[in-house]
Length: 243
Image 1: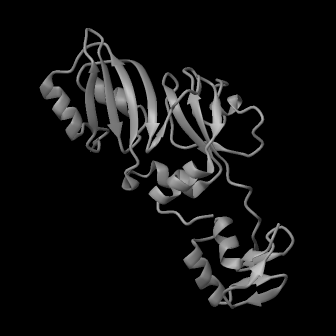
Image 2 (image 1 turned 30 degrees about the horizontal axis):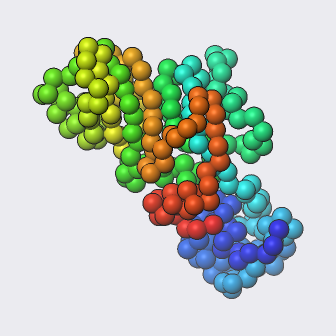
Image 3 (image 1 turned 180 degrees about the horizontal axis):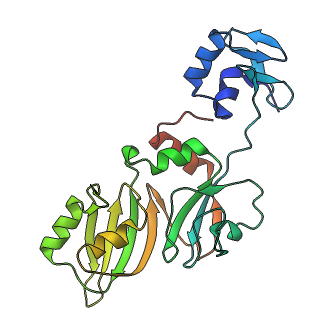
């Protein structure tokens, strides 16, 4: 690997933010091949050099991978399942990186799912504070009244805590209507429980968009790598430093 600035290597290894890494260097807490480094601008090779912070060896982080998948129904959104059910990781043929799901879609739900090995990216995508919207289309076993729709939008008490305000739009009326739901948080089974609060059951649920990224033509079980432009756009939205 080519040499890079030490604070950048520490940030990419998940030790600290780049600014905090600079502080660690200035405090003399970083060594390279046994020598204390206290000057900013020093470069090193993460694979060749022995880099330590407070005496602990720093390992180079594997290359970041960002995937978009159309999760099928009846797959668990985890790396492994104690019940032996198929997981979304089982669908990643040819991917050598150890990625994991960003957030979750429950067992019976389908649609757009992001997977990555970038912990900071995953954390920021799922944090309600970043306000990254997730859009779903939902089929229910009956319509909500106008009053119920407004209460849904304002937030529903679940587990002693009210959900954040949500978007709700009727997109196909009928005995079993379809709604578009917009969330900025992702509690377990949240949409199903929100409709259940009004006496309605969710028959089908598909996530079609995360932030600006749409599900697109991916078929159930298919996945693709995000393009560099998509990754850069996400990192800008999430206020993350460029790699």
